[in-house]
Image (cartoon, rainbow, N blue to C red; front, side):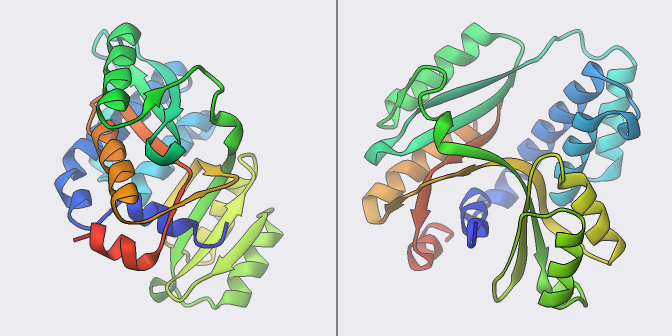
Length: 251
């Protein structure tokens, strides 16, 4: 898991994050709305809603937006019934791609996602074709400059609350957990003063394809095109890119 934040940096490259912030908040609000519609409107009694709110707060989504999405669900919503569908496929250079969506029209979304794959040098596959390459994990990232705790303290607290692993980089502490332990670890670290730049249950690739140059650019273009679709919530890929390459794409 060490260095997984590098992949998060790919997903939130400088410039793209600012340009897509409004769309990102809209997608996070939809995720909160759907979680609230499917269960209790009180996060204390709704695991999926707590996860959606944690993810939104890690992206600095305003509390007003979060509360508005929950109230919308409590009031009966907008009349649309969303379903969560994950599409799988292959990108350029044989990369594995997973696409999580929330859609009110599965036929439209499936056709759109298939078209994006095809147009960007990939192809959409059958369910299960690449999901075996990914593992569900809780993932937390702490900015070292934003907290007073040192590496040893962070590790002791995280492991005490059930974390699987803690990795320190020059700038961050990266904590991985099982999905079930995610909330306990997050709460324990928060009580110790941690502030998270990422806090979510995500898919982590079990093996990665190292890419550079035009090959990396082609995969980024596919990921960008998928992320821009209104129904797409999250895109996962099993790629690895050197920091030098990544810096060029972040411009």
